Image (cartoon, rainbow, N blue to C red; front, side, top):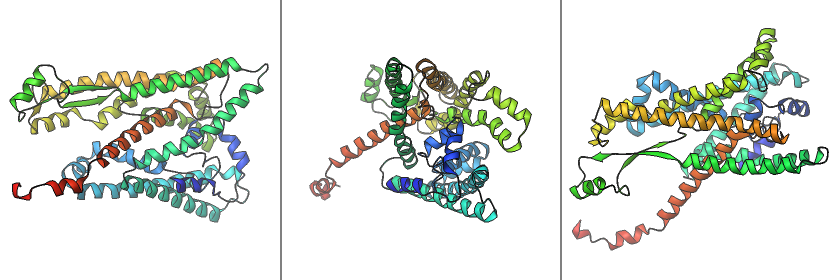
Length: 411
C-alpha cells in the first residue's frame, strides 16, 4: 500500500502542474477520479491512472459475460482453470485500458506542456501504463495475502489520503468568510456524521429470504417451521447491491458532453454541457434518473433470478410457499426490483446531499470528496473489519493440536 502511494509523488516531466491542478479543481468527473487516485492526477504523477483501468476492465467483462454465455460458462463451469483464464482476459483488457487512458491523458495535458511532441507522448504513455500495471500487481498481492480486497483497499487509501487536506481547506474557508462561518461549519460536521451513520445503516441492511433443503433432518425442519431463524439458511439481498457504480456511471455519462466540447471545440456540445453539467438546469433530474436506471441494470447484472432459481432447484432447495423453477425466479425478481428501488433512493439522496450541504453552509472544499467517496470508505472499512474479525477467529483454533488429538483408528 505504501508503494502505491510513492508513485503519486514521482512527477512526469515537462508539465505545468500548477496550471493543470488549478484547472481540475472546478469539480466534475476528473476531480472525482483525482480523488480516487489520491491526487496523483492533479500532481501528474506516474501512478496517475491508478487502479481505474483494472476497474474498467472488470466492469466491462461483467457486462460482456451477460452478452456472451461462453464467458459466464468459463467462470462457473470450468473450475479453477476457467477462472484463471478469465483473469488473464481481465489483465489484457486492463492493459488495453491503461494504454488508451495514457494516450488520452497525454493529449489532455497538451495545453500544459511546453515541448509537446511524439517522443514526449510515447514516453508519457509508457510511464502511465507501467504505473497502472504496477498498481494492479499490488492489488493482486493484497488479495493473495488475504489482507482484504486489493482494489478496494487501494481506493480506500487514496481517498483517505485526501481527507486531512480537505479538512484543512474547510477550516480555512470557514475562517476566511466575513465574520466567520462557525454555524455553517457546525452544520457541515453534523451533516457529515449523519451521512456516515446513514451509509453504515444502509450498507449493512439486507433482505433475508429463508430457504429449505430437502436433505435437512426432521429436527431442523421443525425448528425452521417453528419460526427459528438462527440456523436456517437464507438468501441475503443487500439494500444497495450495486454499490457506488450507478453514481460513477451516471457521472461518466453526464461528463461526456463536456469532454466532447473540450476536444472538438463544438458550440453545440458546449451548449449541451452547460445544461447537463453540474449547476445546469437538467443536471439533478438527469443524474437521479440515470442513477435509478444504472442501479436497476447493475443489480440484475450481478444476480440473474433464472440462474439462481435453477441453482436452488439442482441443490434441492426451495423458498417456503414458493414453487421451484419459474415461480422462484419470479419471486426473486420481484424482491430484487423492490430492493433496487430502495437502493436507488439511497444513492440518489447520497448524490444530492453534498450539493445541498454546500448550498446551506457555503463550504465547497469537500466537493471532490462527495458522498460517493464516503460510501467507498465506509463500505471498505466495514468489509475489511469483517474479514479481519474472521481471520482472528480462525487463528484461535489450534489446527495442529486438533490433528494430534484425533484418534486415527476411528477414522
